[in-house]
Length: 404
Ligand code: GLA
Image 1 (tube, rainbow, N blue to C red):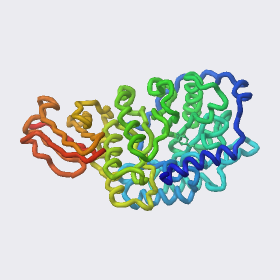
Image 2 (image 1 turned 90 degrees about the vertical axis):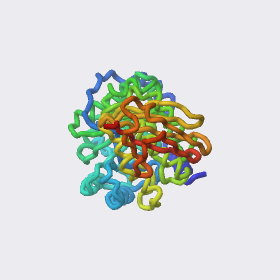
Image 3 (image 1 turned 135 degrees about the vertical axis):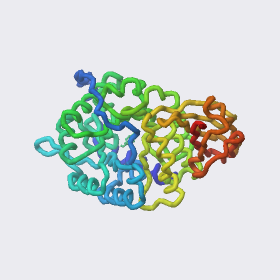
Image 4 (image 1 turned 60 degrees about the horizontal axis):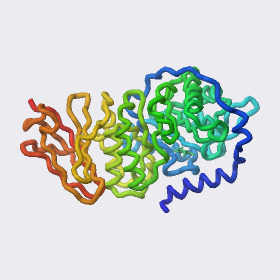
């Protein structure tokens, strides 16, 4: 079993053993949360958020020292300057509340304000995690009944991003769309009232077509799938499924097929390049999930490919669409703000060759078109049709500008 999967399982088991499960008695006591009005957009995340999140690699072992080390690594390895600015602490930072009900951190984290100050001093932003449940998904203290107080506490610490995970609320309220919507709106409104700009990220598994109602909670992004694992089936299934949801994604409000697994060891370099390419085409948040202190050159080249990052971060935020299918190769196309298009060739099977005649992209893309390979970083001759050979599970992205 890959070690990251093992730690995730271990965290879940430990959390279960350590925390008294809130049983059906409580579930029956609270039939429904009170109604909360729709929350207007906060104007943030006009392009998909970029950064790092602790869960995929560290799960429950994350500490403040690790977070500082990740912030240092993001500065040293160029990630910050390439746009990865959020350093997001996932579940397991939480400690007990004090007599006034203020949430504290546990021994792994200590002074959260000092940690936020440190992350900010490195030119980065800090993200944190909570849940509308009394407990989080891993069994730590959640925000239930303390939403406004927690939002104010996060603001006082200097938190810039909140991942809010429905998980623990399942133990309190029946799982219905209305309950999810009201609980997510409640924290959305609390964040607005606290007055600090905070990117608001919802986490559930894509229940009740969350992409249709997510914007009314004040959120900037919402998970559309169960948790990703570090393998091809899990990653490719999540990524390609997203193409059917593209109508609901755009500047300020993004569908989130979960975090990157690039560099975690369970997939081939070609498969990791596919994750980076596919997430950038969708476009989706780019939240690295590996140990940034020990990245090998191949991982660094993938995460730091600025031409591909520019596709993800294109200001128009228009989603990719399916252009055609050539056997196992999916050909996707995305319109960029500058009038160029990016074409993605994704091989979902064994080694294959794909072709494209420039006219397929429209009459303005003829022989005089300018084309560039975004992984090879080379110009492409547009005098003849484009032909590329893709390894098993490999991808190529090309950017094509109209001719003169
Ligand atoms: C859920 C989320 C994960 C992670 C864990 C933490 O499973 O989907 O991304 O945040 O909770 O407990």
